[in-house]
Length: 177
Ligand SMILES: CC(C)(COP(=O)(O)OP(=O)(O)OC[C@H]1O[C@@H](n2cnc3c(N)ncnc32)[C@H](O)[C@@H]1OP(=O)(O)O)[C@@H](O)C(=O)NCCC(=O)NCCS
Image (cartoon, rainbow, N blue to C red; front, side):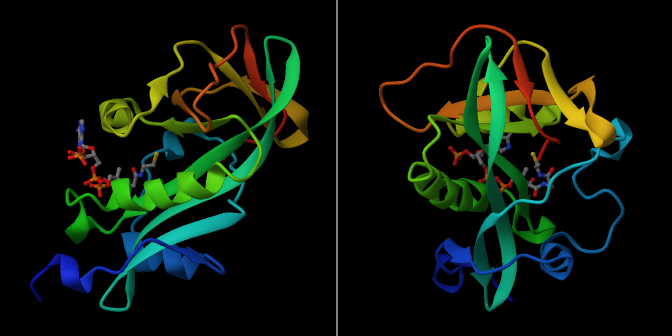
């Protein structure tokens, strides 16, 4: 089936996002996000955005609010995770489309910044989408309240025009997303 823009639907909010939905996008391969080596436990996302192609879910981005400490100030960020595009549909701008819809919604959620974790090879992709590398260690919680340093790259993007990421050490008061 030829891929063309007319068959790709708009990025929409999804009422739910299950394991089966994720498998519809990425298939049933082990470790589709390539992060199993971290050994980390992750939070599920609470709000979901997706794109369908001929009725099939082909892209997703998830959001949730997370408590965070930045330089001793306790605040919240919008965590972004589960960003996925079906292997046969990658490289056509679908991650850009679904993230644009998710971040439009994130701007209504309250926090001033969004934050995501990604593998090093994806840093340039997210920079292209307007995200900035947070070039410092970020502490995250793990089961039992154990603190660990996030081994993935941390990226942030402002959700308002007039805000800058504060200086100082960063830690999530939750599992990562
Ligand atoms: C990562 C992933 C979501 C990207 O999806 P995609 O639909 O191929 O991305 P897009 O086509 O929207 O590309 C986004 C932008 O990054 C650019 N880009 C793509 N690969 C890039 C790279 N290696 N370096 C720099 N920029 C890159 C694209 O040109 C595009 O920019 P443009 O819109 O200005 O042209 C997809 O490869 C995927 O699902 N991978 C498996 C799951 C995963 O690892 N998810 C990431 C979790 S953090």
